[in-house]
Length: 102
Image (cartoon, rainbow, N blue to C red; front, top):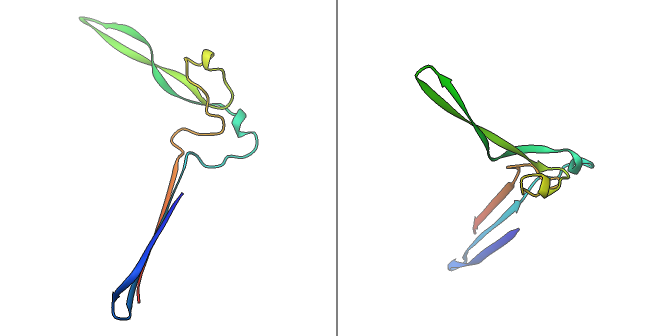
């Protein structure tokens, strides 16, 4: 979280004030037991499959799915560590701004 403000005189009895806040969070709070529920995301390429279709052959890439949240062992999860309660792409950002001329 970052907060900042700036104020001062402009002319005579005229003053200004500027302020704002910026807050970021890796993930929203999830309820009790959420760290035990697995969520999966694509984690690279698993294999390729060649499919012949007459004169040509099409190569299809099959993605690897790895566990993102929940409880897991990185050794058994293609080297990816689990993130507990976090969900993928669940970050949050909040910003506010204030200004006053008096």
